[in-house]
Length: 194
Image (cartoon, one colour):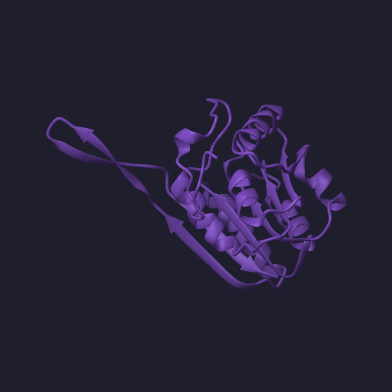
């Protein structure tokens, strides 16, 4: 087994990568997973799965056949499949626009939204409609505008336990004279309960 631990945050270098498909970095993944509050046998939807790094970690935690990974980009679906295979887990891969496929999916315990392609309000409303009572919704974004729309939508939909977190990560890089910290893009994470 590639990842032999119960803790989240699989090192990025263990995943298959592509220059044209984004990956949620390991530190952010750890925080996102903690906000999802997963349990064994939970059902989960990953909207905008990208490289599949979050999907893989979800599958490792919930041990369920009810994990759905959606992406509009065929390259992302193919890369997610490679990563699922590499880690020996499986999910239901869906190559589609989220707003077109979400209505046909079952209600689930948790949903992570990592991409909305400008359809933020519509996708979040659909996600909320697919959450079971007490289900968790987590949205991560680098764009302030997306966070604004997401926050407005979860408030309008009367979600509870709404929390917004900004995360700024810096990683050490060895230099000849010592270690320098290199900052990554700040990430905004919204979590809420239905």
